Image 1 (cartoon, rainbow, N blue to C red):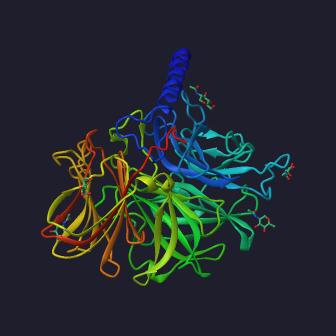
Image 2 (cartoon, rainbow, N blue to C red; image 1 turned 135 degrees about the horizontal axis):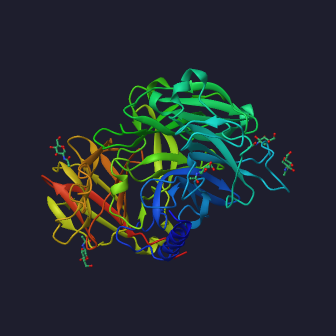
Image 3 (cartoon, rainbow, N blue to C red; image 1 turned 180 degrees about the horizontal axis):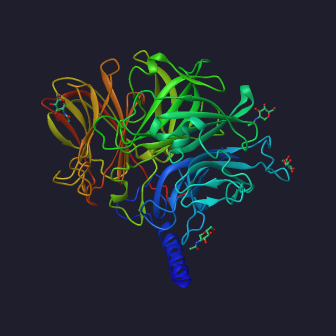
Length: 533
Ligand SMILES: *[C@@H]1O[C@H](CO)[C@@H](O)[C@H](O)[C@H]1NC(C)=O
Ligand SMILES: *[C@@H]1O[C@H](CO)[C@@H](O)[C@H](O)[C@H]1NC(C)=O
Ligand SMILES: *[C@@H]1O[C@H](CO)[C@@H](O)[C@H](O)[C@H]1NC(C)=O
Ligand SMILES: *[C@@H]1O[C@H](CO)[C@@H](O)[C@H](O)[C@H]1NC(C)=O
Ligand SMILES: *[C@@H]1O[C@H](CO)[C@@H](O)[C@H](O)[C@H]1NC(C)=O
């Protein structure tokens, strides 16, 4: 491509980005979930809370709305609700004409003690640790040679609060290759998650050997030199590649007892009945070098989310142990590049505060969504029915962005729940409910609108949920193109994208094969978080 054409193209792309950044009302545009103004996004990267700012980096294609030219996009927030777009943090090397290195997923840490020596003038460096994907054979400035498609772990640092970055070219990749016994895995070695382990005074990195379903654990004093100290896996779900791992502590039942959670992306091979990507977790112990799963956590797979659209989840660093927030890519590799949105593709899940509770004798992740409650109070509608009859009951609440909590008890019905984003004749609708026969929460998106872009999209997804004292509780977050459901106290979650018509704004209750008693509904519209700060 002639360079003037290339320049014109780049100029053109940046104009598109500026215009649509002020818009955010296109069909299917999420109103309170994060999306890039334009172009493709996938995994969250480098989530960190630093100097009272949440930084959200993400896999981003600066050149189009499908996967490619992988770079790190960047957004910041003071509340995890309103996001401000920032310049691309790490742009694929050689973009757009001659890409030699792409910046795949990874994490970020604040090096408060200057262990790396990257700090200057009292400025704490933020260090990003990411996978370098080398597109061509080359000898790097560090003198290290890499093969085409090789993956190694590299670092970059920022001295201006994450806005501009310097790659550590004299040393990268700092983890050049997997250990010798896994030398044949150099193309499948990625997604470093790094954290500071205070008891051992070391940095710890967890890196995935995707095809072998192993997590390699490394430690370091300075983020530049790393020692391989242990490995974990395979366990539980291994139906696809293991990617985007992370390891973090959580107190069990709010107690002193600290457990460690390994969270692992799996693609394909997600929850039963889903088409591709999923996220599992394992509860165990970590001593600074080795992660050991608790026996009861490997008796069956633990899914962070039972739906099809929750992948590559990682948590924010830089926060207290009791304040752990998880964020995922709300899409699926099976159809992610085909979803009918433009000029962007993919949203982030709602941020979810995590805790760990003993439920049915197992240490279980509990998730609580973080959204702008404050704006809702005066618009919240509470309604109570002694009995909701069989069939559908129209609700007065309409809208395409809702936060609804329903509680109910079993009576004669076999299923009960809420229909959201329905057209007036109900020909389009998404059902979110509970099946009393099977004890499962479900999202039925078979008639949710545009389902034709992929043959697996029109389906029903299930999560097991035990009623508490005979009462089922479910919280349903609806945005213009997604539904997230949290069952019980948040011990199960189900996330699914939907692409309904613009006039699919109606809401109903449904009760199948009989009436449902003791129904309480609390619902409020959720306002756009874009341009309303
Ligand atoms: C692409 O970049 C590499 C590394 O900078 C350089 O060696 C090569 O000549 C470039 N190729 C083209 C076609 O510009
Ligand atoms: C961090 O270490 C580097 C290298 O030793 C030094 O030049 C710099 O002054 C240090 N920065 C701070 C804030 O201590
Ligand atoms: C920084 O150093 C202090 C004092 O040695 C130590 O307690 C703390 O864990 C260190 N923190 C990090 C993030 O390096
Ligand atoms: C809908 O609103 C009307 C009028 O305010 C009210 O009488 C009715 O009970 C409401 N129905 C529901 C299901 O909330
Ligand atoms: C609820 O479970 C019953 C029994 O397995 C089944 O016939 C019915 O189709 C289920 N409903 C949904 C929505 O899956």
